[in-house]
Image 1 (cartoon, rainbow, N blue to C red):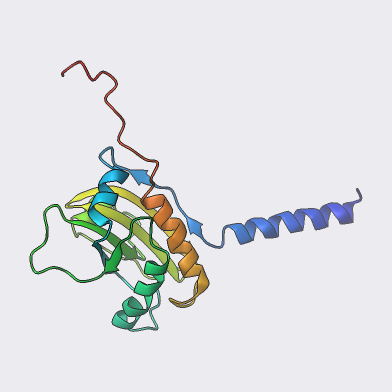
Image 2 (spheres, helix red, strand yellow):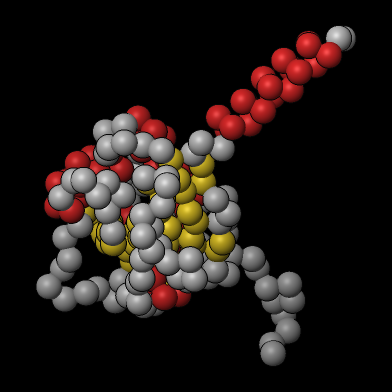
Length: 187
């Protein structure tokens, strides 16, 4: 293989790597209490509340962005037969299960702070759509992840793809609580 062919091959590989990182889902973390069975039981054939903080499309009014984003999330929902809603009940249920979506979160924002409603933002990043997603039960973060895409509006197909991947990761049906290694011993 001559140098020109090697150079072309290296450029092709680098361009593919650049395309692969254009959008994606970051690392995911689960609390030991996370149980997909619990998520399924509280959402199947029910509404599931989403709380949005921030706006990934700053040129669009907040209420319009939320109105246009909800059907995109619903079309890419996780496995249970759930209906996403933004409606906050007059009295919060206990336990209060919800999905918190924080757009352009502060660099040091933690999932525990998100579930405790201590949310802070940073200036919008170069990527127009960057979200920190946290699945909460009351003040406990059960799962969390980040996702990003260079989407230009709620109906951009990349937003639907992002939510489809993000929901698969946040609500992992194969993640179960680990049984106690010595169930017959009491501590």
